[in-house]
Amino acid sequence: MAQPVTNPDRDLDWVRGIPQQNRCLVMGVVNVTPDSFSDGGLWFDSDAAIKHGRDLIAEGADIVDVGGESTRPGAQRVSGEEELRRVVPVIAALAADGALVSVDTMRVEVAEAALEAGARIVNDISGGLADPAMPRLVAGAKVPYVVMHWRGHSHDMQTRAVYTDVIGEVCDELRQRMDAVVAEGVDPELIIVDPGIGFAKTAEHNWALLAHLDRIRALGRPILLATSRKTFLGRLLAAPDGTPRPPMERGDATVATTTLAAAQGAWCIRVHEVLPNVDAVRVVAAWRAAR
Image (cartoon, rainbow, N blue to C red; front, side, top):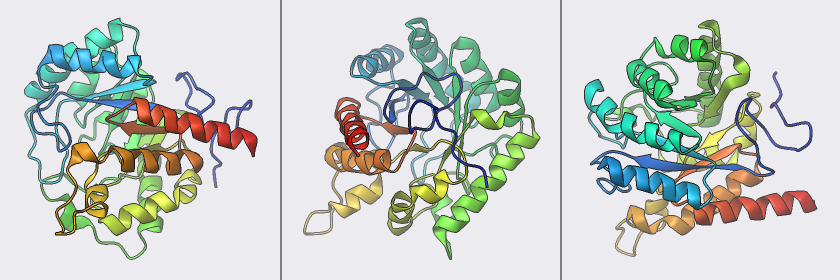
């Protein structure tokens, strides 16, 4: 079995072409959507989204991830034209500032336009399943490619949250996707894996995956983990009457999961609030260095 690729100077995974810190990286989320589960509409205007991206960089984000299509459970897809209208101006402005920009998309035409506008990472939550042309584009562009565990589109993905062994099945399905995109020409050293927390997963599945990132890391590729503000945290922190804690009030719980992920060797965490999570990964780095 392949072993995780590590920086020879540090006990940390790394991805070719992406500057590495002596800690887990932090990816800040820029949702250019009116219906994101966590901050729907706050950054829908291009100018607001650009300012938000700049603010995240100022707070210490290593990467900004720009997306124009909500993937919350139950979300319906937008057109490719609308997705392009939302993300390209934001990516172009942030890339012009010198930011390391990732595009969060499942469409090859959006990824292609984003790369032309200055994006340097493709974050495809479908791992190439939603648009079979995506791996070939990434292969030709020679950019890092996030391959997430995915079982279908948001409108009905939770019906697919059926597992006998969630860790084993997620690892097997990720391995299959890795093999598939490599067969399309993607450089295996540019693949990043994401276990897909919240995507066709129950809360129990999410906790199991978070507790066993070592099994996913054994696939031999760096891990991007995205737990920020997700429903399983809201349910854990529910009020006495069972009402889940609202997304904007799940920041401390997100920081806790960031700490757990970084301590297990995650390469990068994807979050809505950057500063407290940068603090968390710095604490973990100091702890790891002292061991």
